[in-house]
Amino acid sequence: ERKIDEDLNAGIVIPDYDVFVVFQEFLVPLIQDMHCMEVQPNFEPHPPMQFFPRYVMTETQNETHESNGNVLRENPNEIQLNLDTSGRFITGAVVECCRNLDAFEFPLNLSIAQLERAERILTSKILSMLFANAIGEEELGTYYTMNEILESQSEIRTILATSGLLIPMLDHSDPYQTAESIALNGRYWPYGRGVYVSHHQDLVA
Image (cartoon, rainbow, N blue to C red; front, side, top):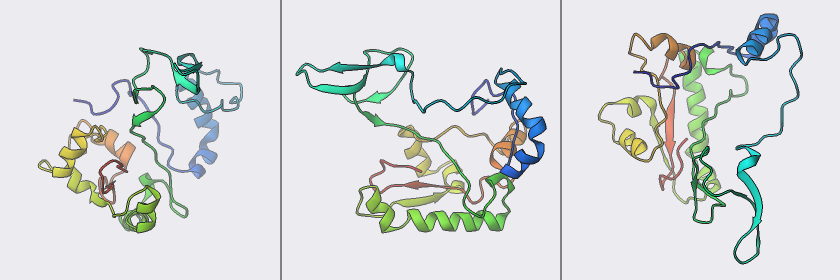
């Protein structure tokens, strides 16, 4: 059983910027070909950021004739968003993102010692009152190592799954998924990774 998108049948790992620079003569045509682009022309400028198509947006007035600004059209079948009753605000969302820290390479290249150091840097920030205050809370949240999350009888795993916050993950121990897991997560997965849950359990990182 696959744990990620079924259409992911090919891919390439570029662990850091230097690799891209050295192999760009090979990588740029490959990336363009994978995205069905013309191989010879240069990349076009990146378009403006837009989280959903303009055709599902409209500028209307509500029943009191007050401007709502941009709101979703009624019943856009192509988009599933958890909205409030007015249709203006998203009440819940899952955001997946990653980046490398200064002076660190991307996670795929990190040694165990570097993973430990990166984890200490991150937890020192998120397990601080400065961070708690920044997200509007008065108490510290809790940090769980990924090993705790992956335990079969894990209480926090159940909480995350029930809340729809447990993202799909490959099974590193499954021989059919090991290679893909290493390519995406690195050979030391899940070492050095973890999940932060805010005190009110309304923010997970």
